[in-house]
Length: 337
Image 1 (cartoon, rainbow, N blue to C red):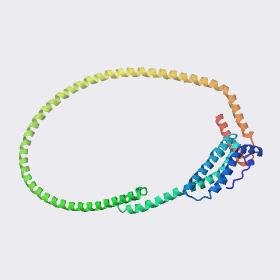
Image 2 (cartoon, rainbow, N blue to C red; image 1 turned 90 degrees about the horizontal axis):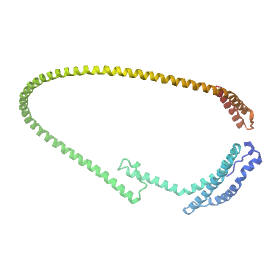
Image 3 (tube, rainbow, N blue to C red; image 1 turned 90 degrees about the vertical axis):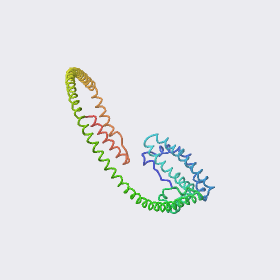
Image 4 (spheres, rainbow, N blue to C red; image 1 turned 30 degrees about the vertical axis):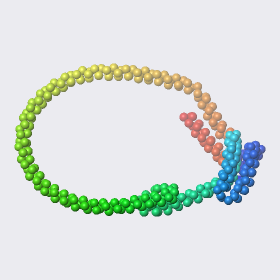
């Protein structure tokens, strides 16, 4: 658990300021020294059921040292100023590595038996899928490892019997199909004889139907004469209604044209008033903007001064400052528009 060496000057800080920032971490680190000693002792213990609570209890205290100690110190100091924040970021990242290494090792020990159980269940699932797949098609989609042995044996026996019952049912169905074919042949012969009888009866019905059709034809001719007379009378009535409707529509059209003309005149008047109001508003805004020109010039001047106000030592910050200058140029150009 070798810690990374972090130099204050790499972050633009003198040693005094760096000590001020890291002073609050001393108690946390002293506490962790004790945790490290305890970790080294616990790590030597065997992975047994009775040792699992020890692994967990120590891991939680290491987590608390990281979250309530290192992280809390980091949050408080990062808010102090940006450069100091970057420095404490580096300290925090260095320090939590030690905690996380111990936490990970203890977590592996905690989960040892749990992982063994998962492996056993996975192997049992595969074995049972192989046995069950002989009798069902979706064996791999079923949760088989979760069953107790007696439940599983009963379940497998049930599916096996259902498979055998299905085969027997298919054999019974085939015998039934053959019997049905024989019965259908006998029924076809009966139908043939019945059809011969029905044909004779149909011919007699056809003769009677012909007589009935001639009677209906005569009645239809008489009905058509009546309908033609009614159609002519209805046409004359509809023609009269259309003429009356046309006269009514002409009156309504003239009234609608008068109404639309009035609405158009009112709309034109409203638009003219709105245009005059907008022009007056634009004139007032132009008058107000006349006094802002001097302020705009001062704003651009202040932005230009920011481009040379600061100096940095590290190449990272020098490049960052150059990019800030480019952004200021873009802002000035936008203001000049």
